[in-house]
Length: 162
Image 1 (tube, rainbow, N blue to C red):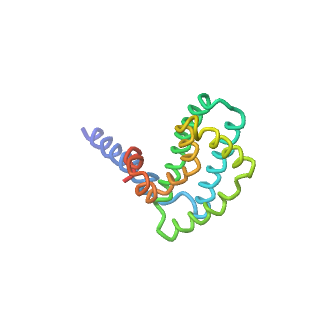
Image 2: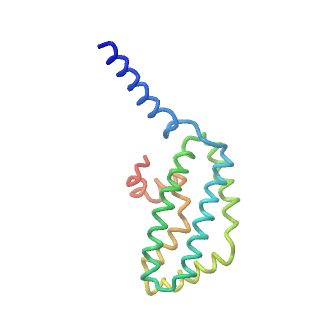
Image 3: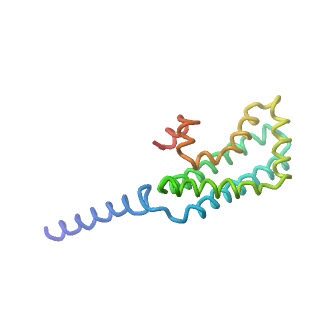
C-alpha cells in the first residue's frame, strides 16, 4: 500500500514536471535575436526549397501538391518557433522580430525571380497555386501569433493558438 502511494506521488510529480517544464509556459530556449535569426533561417530554407521546386517543375498541376506539402511542413516549423517567441516579454519579441526582418532580406534574387515567374504563370491558369505561392511568401506570420490571430483567425484556431 505504501509503495503504491509512493509510485502515485512520483507519477504525479513526473506528469506535473512534463506539463510545466519546457512546454509552452517555460522560459524561452534562446536569446530573442537568435530566435529571430532562426525564424529567418527557416524562411530562407523554405524560399530556397520553393525556388528549386518552381524552377524544376513547369507543370502547375504537379507543382501545386508539392507547394501544399511545403506549406504544411513550414507552418509546423513556424508555429513551433512562434510558441517559443510567445514566451518572450514584449521587448524580447520586438528584438526577435527585428532580427527576423534583417536576416530575411538575404533571399537570392534568382530565387525571388523564379517564384515571380511561377506566380505569373499560375495567375490565370491556376489561381490556387498562385494563392499558395503568395501565402508561402508570407508564412512567417505563423511565428507571430498576434499577427496570425488578427490576419488568419481561423488558422490560429485550427492550430490551437489562442
